Length: 466
Image (cartoon, rainbow, N blue to C red; front, side):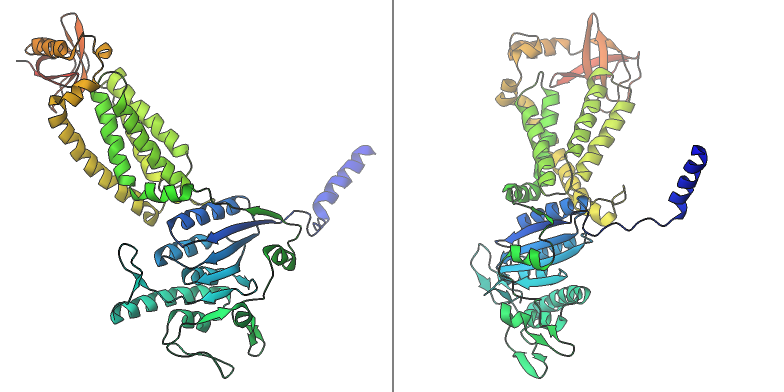
């Protein structure tokens, strides 16, 4: 009897419709992003971090708490693209003012609300003089091209989110006259700026607000109006590191050059000292910039470290084995590229070509500059007092730099046997002594006789003996 009861219950669980989940059982998550000060690179990093956190947390609503006089158009467009990654509801609350780029960003959200006595608009592009000297008049042709390009982009966002695109056009283009229900809202020659009351005024049939869905006293009141009073609200706060990251990412190629030069110099000098610390610091700051910018996690720094260890093992522990070195180089290159790739939850594992554009450019600049730096150091540095000071006596096994140079001079002309394949680096035995050696580029097989012809740092430069 119990068996039959169990079978009937099991079949019922499959055949009967499942009960509808009650509304509001799962608390809604709301992320609030502050849009403050100027629209510049640090703000883009903050927005990217906040949107990624909201996507990962499966938030339902994203609110921009806005008070800005505007800023750079290119950063504004970047922020608009970032907001497009959020699939929930997007809202702008104009807390006091949303001028210029701030108005563009507001139009890129689905709903706009405004605080009492707040304003939005004045979005015509301007050109700033170099050195912060203030706005300058643009040539007519340049102004027409910029207005055309920007207004098209913003009109697209307005249409997508159900805003009045004629209102947006009047905010950007001073040649546009805005006429609604026979009323002139903006005369030709003016740039449209709206107060909260004007933006919320309704027109047409059926009645629709000009731009804002209403004047709300505070962000808390807005949450109540939207039915989100019981929601879990997460306020994304600026850390101050965003401004640091904006500088680090500007000099990212230089940081890679410093890292390459430091590691090269460390490998050329015995022991571990200042060059290694400088190289590690350069690479660390490179990865830190990408992390703060919200582009990638610190896992790529770990991948880089493992790759570097494999390369060191290939050179100093198992020279000539090739496999660890190739894997290490592959991990290093992958980490350097992926650290600057803008990754989003749910994206395919392989990045697209547009995502790889900036990282590959930085890498090519760094390799070019690093190659020149290494060449200069190999030619000039060994003959300087600085190089001698960087070589610790305890690491060299001789009592002084002069003694070390004397020992090197005595080794020139000695003939030994390659203990590993020289590709071009490896080890060779001269009498009872085994030395780290390097060829001038040719490969020498294991067991072949080699002759020391000079020294490069601590390595003996060898050629195949006749």
